[in-house]
Image (cartoon, rainbow, N blue to C red):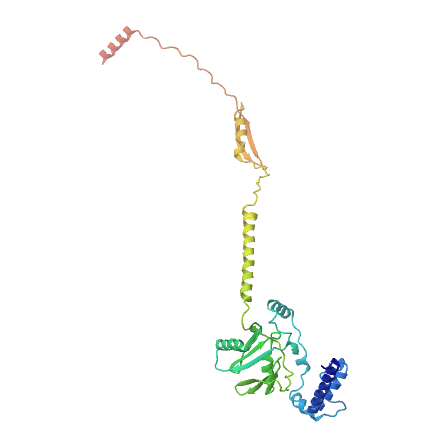
Length: 352
C-alpha cells in the first residue's frame, strides 16, 4: 500500500506533465499568463491588449487573439462611460427590484460581469409571425430547454420587418438584445457570452441568424455589448394578483375608516345646544307692557314704535269726562176737558 508522500509526488508529477503539454500547444499564451500572474493587481486595471513584453509579438499569441481584438474598433469615451440616471429612473429601478429581485436591469452603461451572465441565452429572428405565436414558441422553448423555468426571462422587439426575441435563464435579469442589434448595424458578427455556451449572431439580408458555439471554441465576446434591457418573466409569478389583493385590502381598510368617521364623527356626534346670547325685542313681548298701560286710569296708549334698537310705548293722558247740563223742565200741556173737546169737534164738523 503506497504511503501519502508517494501519492503527493505522483500528483505533482502529473501536474507538471500537464503544464508542459499545455505550454507546447500555446507557448506564447502560457508565458503571457505566467507574466500576468507575477504582476501586481494594479497592472491589470487598464484595458490594454495582451502582448509579450519588449514589443515582440508572439506568433501563437497573435493567432489566438489578434483576429478577434482587431475585428472591433475601440469604444469611444462617450459610449463606454456610464450615463447618469435621473431620480425617477433610479426610484423606478428600486421599486422594480423590490417587486421582483430576479428581474431588474442593471444600470445603463453597466457591462455585465461573468458572474452575472445568464446560464444560457437564446436570441433569434422570425418573419411572418404574430407576437402571440412567438410567445407560445418562447414558452415551449423554455419548457424543453430550461432547468429552472421560474428564472427564465424574455423580451420581443420589432426588427427589420419581423420580430427579434431574447430568452435568458438565470443571470441578473438584464437583456442584451438592443445592444446586440445596435452592434450588428456596425459589424457582421456578434458574440454574446453566457455561462455555458456563447451565442453568435450573423447579419443576413432579411435579419440575422444565430447559433450556439461549441464549448471548446475560443471566440471572445463582443466588447460593445451591454446588458441593460428590462426583461419579463416567461412564467408569471402572480405578482399582479398579489398587488391587486393588497390594493383591495387597502381600499377596504380606507372604506371602513371613512364609514366609521362619517357615523361616529359626523352623524352621531354629540349635539351641542345652541342658545342665542342676544335678546331680541319682539313685538309679541310688548303685550304685557301694553296691558299694563291699558289698565292705568286717565291714560291710553297712543302708539308702539321701535326706535334705538328697542320698543317704545307712547302713552298719553286722557281728558276727564264732563257730563252735559240738564235741560230745564218744560210746562206740562193743559189737560183738555173731554166735554169741551167734544163740543169743539162738533163745531168743526158743522162748519164743514
